[in-house]
Image 1: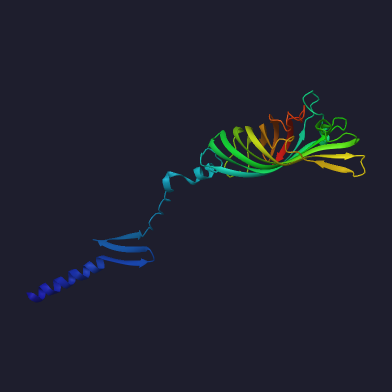
Image 2: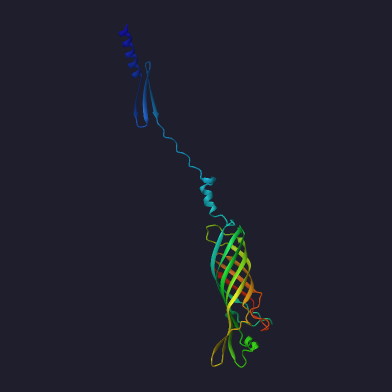
Length: 271
């Protein structure tokens, strides 16, 4: 009886091994099963895990929005920008009774300086400037301030100029008609209104006469005022700006000379 049971178990195990068998090739597995007189073939393939979706950028900002932000207008109050510039201006003649006559084409102004501005909003900024200025006023020989000062009497003046070297500081407010974009390298289109004060550290009147000694320079701290103040306006675009400057303080002491120098200068600046 025990032998019969042993033979039966071995037969069942063999049939079970024959009933289900499989072969694996790479990620494919072939499984064969027998159910009665039928043979069932099953093929399975191990699929790899699907790729993980890309991680969202930090702070929920997409790469597209980052690239768009590069073209946004400047609108951060913490943005501070410094620009250097050079400029040339021309003094406008004024033939009124209050001013000496100057020759416009030969009466010039040269500026070299820098400005720093702070953007308070998209269309508004404030700033300050520091510059060196040189002024050259060419006066008509027939109008001789030095004669009125009692310095000249017999000399025949052939050429007369007044020159000054100034150090200026000023402030301005800026209104953007077309605000600049960040990282664009452009300055937009803007209008400035401001004021500046000048310290005239070197000033003199230079004459060319028929005197044998030729050219002469006359300096008088009492006649030539050491400080002046001006109102300024400017319209700019890109690297260029057109400016106007109106000096509302006299360059000459009114107690010493009855007339003054023309007060308006118009020119262009390059940044």
